[in-house]
Length: 144
Image (cartoon, rainbow, N blue to C red):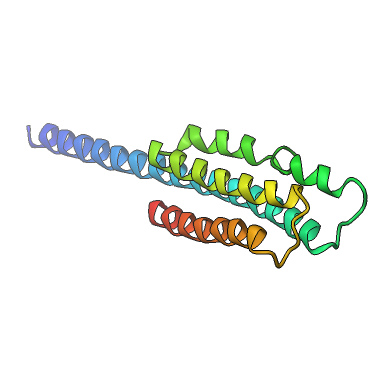
């Protein structure tokens, strides 16, 4: 009888340990997936921002530079990365990433109009985009 009870206790204990391990593994996988999606989105926005900065500085100043500024969201995959991110994150994070993209669009539009780098009309959207990106990075860190 005591052997049967001992076996049941061992079986129950093993079940609980496996259940806990499985839950922990799912949480780690979710965090890893989230971290990858965050990194891909941030990398795409950094690439877009770098392209816009180069164009606005005149470092990339051929006849197609302003046209490239206007297609920077597509060319750097910002929108695709946001859609990927929206599949694995909260609605609040999706709203925050949409806000960042709106600011990136304002920055893109200013560069596309050929506004000089030091002009306030370009400086304001660039600074707003950078501030929002830093805020978003802080929020992303808190969710990992």
